[in-house]
Length: 72
Image 1 (cartoon, rainbow, N blue to C red):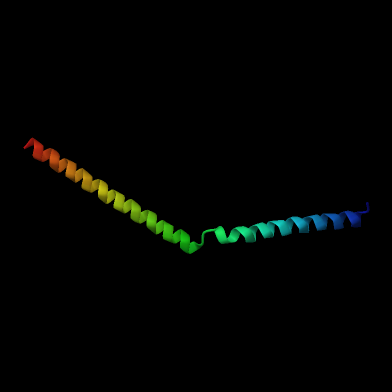
Image 2 (image 1 turned 120 degrees about the horizontal axis):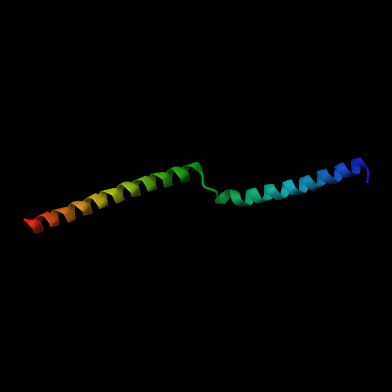
């Protein structure tokens, strides 16, 4: 095989692999999260954490209040 034929075969192989990668990327693209999706989920996580902290503080105050009233 000459150098030119070898180069052509390699070029064809590279093009075939590139086509497969591009096809795979186009297939997966609709399933990837957008920037807006990430921002929305970040906000939801922060809100969930704040709500959980408020609930824990409320529970602690209730337990402490009941404990103090049972002592006195």
